[in-house]
Image (cartoon, rainbow, N blue to C red; front, side, top):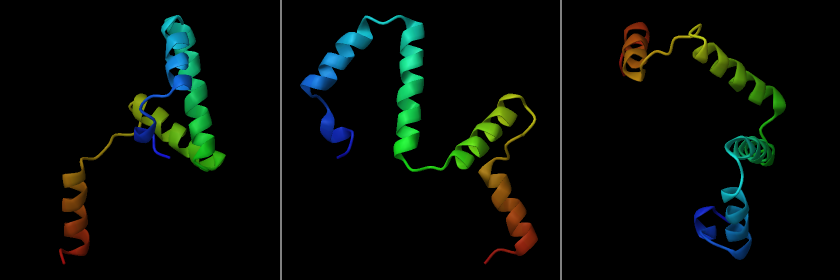
Length: 83
């Protein structure tokens, strides 16, 4: 069942009513827990999540600098030739 097919349900509406009464900090904690549960449900192994988190940390700290996709394609074309 997709998220789009559950646009509204009594349980969902009840949850939204509770969330509306929460503080910003409580909502942040709830969001973190829901995201963690969704990751667990996705079947992504812990080691893979750790790799992603480490890469995001490196980006956030400016240690890792992303390369625009167009530049990557140009570099690969130069190295391997366009086919």
